[in-house]
Amino acid sequence: MIIKEIVVGPLMANCFIFGCKQTKEAVVIDPGGDSDRILLELSDANLKVKYIINTHGHFDHVSANGKMKAATDAEILIHPQDAPMLGMLSTNAAIFGISVENSPPCDRTIEEGETVSFGNISLDVIHTPGHTPGGISLYTDGIVFVGDTLFAGSIGRTDFPGGDFDTLISSIQNKLFKMRDDVRVFSGHGPETSIGREKRYNPFVGLY
Image (cartoon, rainbow, N blue to C red):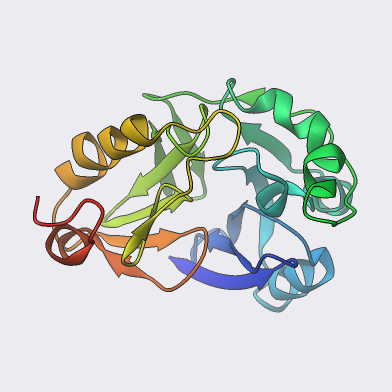
């Protein structure tokens, strides 16, 4: 597996390139800006993008959807509950004084129980709402991409429209924390962590 992390956009979101070494197929998870940098990393690694996956619909995670799709012809995937947010990016970003273009609509929606396959890799889709109604996490082989559901030592905000604190805590405790302690956690902001570390030390959901 190939994992490349690129910090993008004015809110410093983590975009991940996740690729198959054998086939050179890849997905781009949460292209929130700086499409030229993402495309350069893909070119340097000789990777072909099959899917653009949005863990949720906030502008700092999806605002490069359009440019990435135009350059790669990859399909945009998002949970159905967050799909309408793709057409409201400019309005939501303006609250932060940031100008972005709306995303194209998704090519298809993905829900819990489905898998996203590329190369020799399959990602299991897990619905982890709370930060947004349609937030998802993506799991494979000891790795989980969690978007803004869980951070190293913190959790996602729930004060935006559609956020709900109790729902977020339930997603973390009843879904993410059911995984093995050694599962590597790649979050939408900040450094990599692990399920076990967050169980023990996260002040919001730790000591589980």
